[in-house]
Image (cartoon, rainbow, N blue to C red; front, side, top):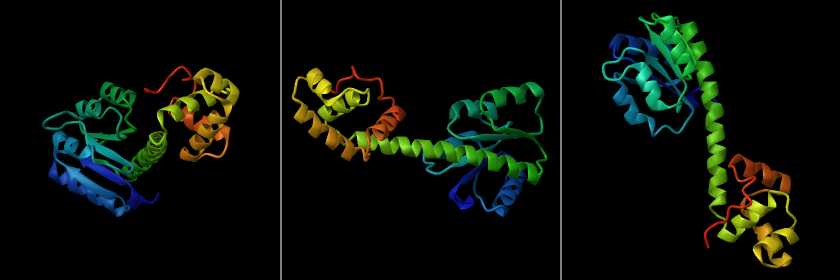
Length: 211
């Protein structure tokens, strides 16, 4: 991932601070979007499709930075900046998942270091979400019976055992199993188990898709 693949949001109600932060961040090659209020930023969050982080002022005119952090519920890594912070506020923000807490005026070196770390975390989260979405899309290709077969196969049951549980013959289960492997884009049982485990399907042998 290059810097231009990611996005840094700056949320601060001070125009001059916002512009200064944006210049510093852009000079490092990052894309930047700035907002003067928490609500303006919240209107943008749902459409984010790339790794991103937020440089967030604690004192805002509508929601405080800490209130906005609760609204985001961990959706994006947050770097707090403030001229009025105290130890209790810093500890609270970090416990709630903030990646850093910087005092104004913020030095470029500290800011860019914090952004780099936040975007690294965001990229990892983004990759996991992308993979899970891809797996769920493949699961959506399965018929109800194929989903039942997969749920049993990943628990280690043999084709004969699966056939017995589903009231059919082994030959039919082999056919279903082959289609499951193809639709899930895997080539081995071990790979199928790993994929199923990522979406919580392992251990779900008693789950039955609706007929």
